[in-house]
Amino acid sequence: MTSASRSNVVSSFTVVKGAMISETYAVFAAWDFALSKRENLDRLRSENFIGAGSATWLRDVAKVLNRRFEPEGRDRALVMLAKSGCGLDEWKPLLLWHMTRDEFLVRDFLQHWLFPAFDGGAFRIRSDEVEAYIANIGDRGATTEHAWSEHTRKRVAAGLLKIAADFGLLRGSIVKEFASYHLPERSFLYLLHAVREEKLSPAKIMAALDWRMFLMRPSDVERELLRLHQFRRLDYQVAGSLMQLSLPCTNSREYAERMVA
Image 1 (cartoon, rainbow, N blue to C red):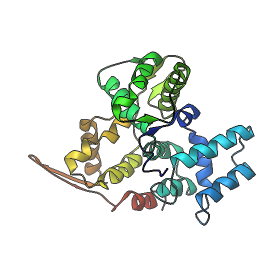
Image 2 (image 1 turned 135 degrees about the vertical axis):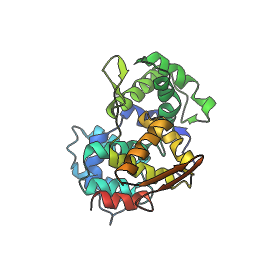
Image 3 (image 1 turned 120 degrees about the vertical axis):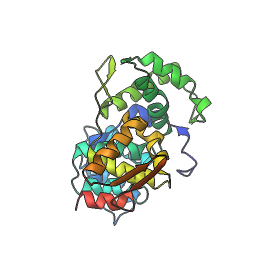
Image 4 (image 1 turned 45 degrees about the horizontal axis):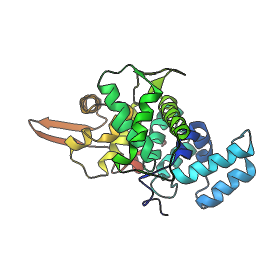
């Protein structure tokens, strides 16, 4: 099955295994573009250069990375940034964006459940509320690799909440609450380039669902555009209903190269 045909397939395995932020960064920092993805992951399994505590966890890391990322394709810039020593605070939001290109449930949960809860003024998030969302995931066009038991749904709900917490969107251990999240400036600019690659108008860029994954409303995006225009990081002009947006680079990969230049 190709990655394109899997884009709406929900895997409980990857969600339960979690964000794997430090592991992914370490693997990508040691990535060799001269080797294939399979060769790089084989080297990870044989050398354990990330210091995994068990052979099982090492195998799981390789399996999740194989499922989530295409380092030779759409995720090359993410790998390049890790190899160049990009700071983890700036890299983490980009990891979230890249992993959700092929992680339907995480993307859908953040965009269509967690953000509406945040936007509606919710303060605390309960696991049973997430379980109810998961029970209806098929209505959102997703298919599971196999039928999920009640136990699996509970584990997936807990996994989604932990992923959101690992990326700084939520806080707390047993009871989760919304955190005060701020997207770093250069991370915002990278994502702005990435969203623009969809050939959207400035208005549609501001309204893109991807910003919801960082708890940003369209008004928040525009406020950041105006701030960055003021500091000459980009050019954003508004005249009535007309908007013009000019970014410093032609695409996200070129901007990534500028980030580590």
